[in-house]
Every structure is written in structure tokens, then in C-alpha cells.
Amino acid sequence: MSILSFFHNLKLKHYTKNIQKTVRECGVNLRVNGPSIATSNTYLGNNVNFNGIHIQGKGKVKIGDNFHSGIECMILTDNHNYDNGKAIPYDETIISKNVTIEDNVWLGNRVNILPGVTIHEGAIIQLGSVVVRDVPKCAIVGGNPATVFKYRDKEHYEKLKSQAKFH
Image (tube, rainbow, N blue to C red):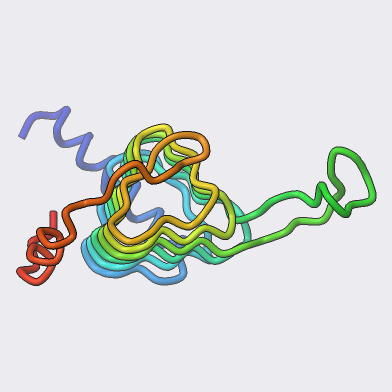
């Protein structure tokens, strides 16, 4: 093993341990391949892969099994009180909403997920998307705001799932 490879692996172990120490629950086989931040109100399933994600806010974030994120992704659970507040553009009130990401979800690079969103099983979020509403099962979404433009082949998806063919 080269000295560069050694230090690279050491850095990845450091990223992973930091997330494991921070989150409320963590399944097996967590891999953190880039700088990532999570909260103590984060729950991770098995085979979760972070390649550079920032989870921010007081709301609960639940990420299911076989999750993969691209680089520079962000999950927000808090928003400011801009509608009924005592000041403009917003007051000191923080509004927290949970975010749920079910099993087998893949986020492309630079995806942003806003408070209160559920991304259902098997969904794929295109790079650069801003997810402002729930995403259906096996949907492929993209844009700002993210909208469904296609669905995975559900029969093929279910076949691979039944054979436990996970990356």
C-alpha cells in the first residue's frame, strides 16, 4: 500500500467514525467517502454510503438501507418563520419538520432536500435537484423544484430486490 493510499484510507475511517459518533442510530456497513455532517437526530439504516452530505436542523432524519449520496448534498429539517412571524424577513422562531428517505434511494451530486419531505423506496434524485415535496416509489426526479420525469422499471427493481442485489 502506498503512503497516499494509507492516508486516504485513514481519512475515510475518520469521516466514518465522526458520523457514527454523532448519529442517534447507525446500521452496519456505513461508508463515508467524503466530508459529511449529521445531527444527533439522524437515524441510519444498513449499507449507507455518504460521499459528502450535510444534514442540518433539529428535525428527525431517517435514512433507510442501501442509500447512496453524491457529493455536496444537503438535507435541511428547519425553516424560519417568514409567514406569521414578528419580523421581516423572518423572526427567531424555527420550524422543524422531519425528513424520511426510504430504502434503496440514490441522490446525485448537489441534491438539496427541504424540511418535511419523504423520498419513497427506490427513488433516484437527479444531480442538482431541489426536493420540495414527497417523491413516489421508484420515481426519477430532477430540477428545481424536483418533478417526476420517469419511473424505474418496477418489475426489474422488485426482481433485484428479491435477490438482495444491493450495491
